Image: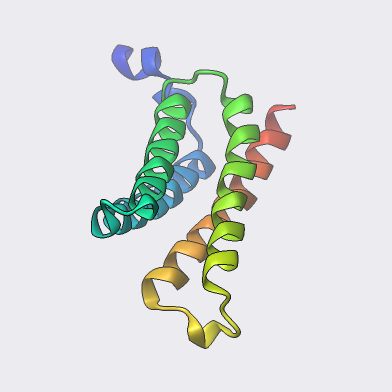
Length: 122
């Protein structure tokens, strides 16, 4: 229990854990896409996104400037959605693959969770 307190696990709420799970989902999707797209520049972009989500998770778990992590995570995650839309131009939900649907839903819910977490800490 002492180690858990030292890294901040004791202060994580169910909402934190939900956000961590959502970040893991989108991070995993981006990791898979990144490996599939390498050596194309898109592969590197997907891997950068994976690193960003994992870094955010690590900082939140370590209880390091959580409010700043939430605040930076909102536009970081929103940018993923905007870039995906610009590059793919889906006309309807039917145009989305299962992976895209899961990823975008996870990202939208992650943004909502980050906004709530940020507002709670203010």
